[in-house]
Amino acid sequence: MNKMDKGKLIVLEDRVPKLKEQRKHKANKRLIFYLSLFFILILLIVYSQSSLSNISKIEVTGNEYVDSKDVVKASGLSTKTSYWEVDKAKVSEAVEKHPEIKEATIDKGFPNKVIIRVKEYNRIAYVFSKGTYFPVNENGKVLKAVKSSEISSSAPLLVEWDDPEAIQEMVQELSKAPTSVTTAISEIYYVPKKSEPLHIELFMNDGREVSAKISNFSEKIVYYPAIIKQLTPDQEGVIDLEGNSFTPYKKKDK
Image (cartoon, rainbow, N blue to C red):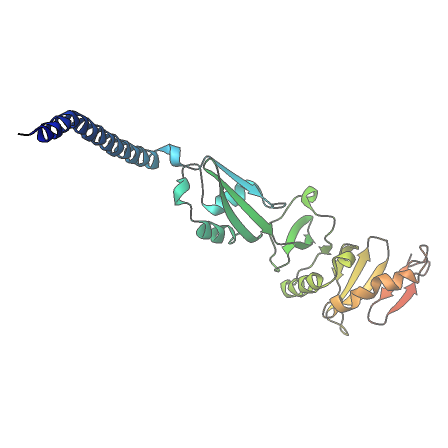
């Protein structure tokens, strides 16, 4: 064996322990990686099966008339529901089945928080019958009775209306009329006549009386602001929207 071969052998013998050490180090790293991955998977399985993965909080926003508890009940969610099993589309659809909810969107927040954002139907009017107030939505649904303290001052009262079809027609007309005008109405009475079966009488917040009919109410009521501009505050009487006229009260009528 020449000197060159002896040199190579010595170099290789010196490197063998280092190579073994490197291989051992790589094997240890690989083992740690697989053990870590294994434990992470175990933790995920335990987490998904435990109460830690459940919804921690349900928040409702955008509701004015519907109680938050009723919205949550309609959603079908609870703190026992898994956060990861919440289907936004299905929950939204469930909430929108509530008669007072027009739209619902579901958002998820950290940690394990669910937010239900709702848009309610407008309350167009309240049917007042036998001392009880029944809200009526813009979609024409008559809702459960509410307390007088829950009534919105921006919606008129339909006093003693016992004809469901007439109520539906009146609500449709109110929904088409400008809000600036409908909020000026205090009470609406259904007073059918032989000559006009859809006749109604309105009492406005300014103290004036209006004679009209349901069928073209939304078209005619828009003229109310222009008509009262021609009257002085002390002029009281009946404004006839059909004839665009004003009839002052007689002393006995007043």
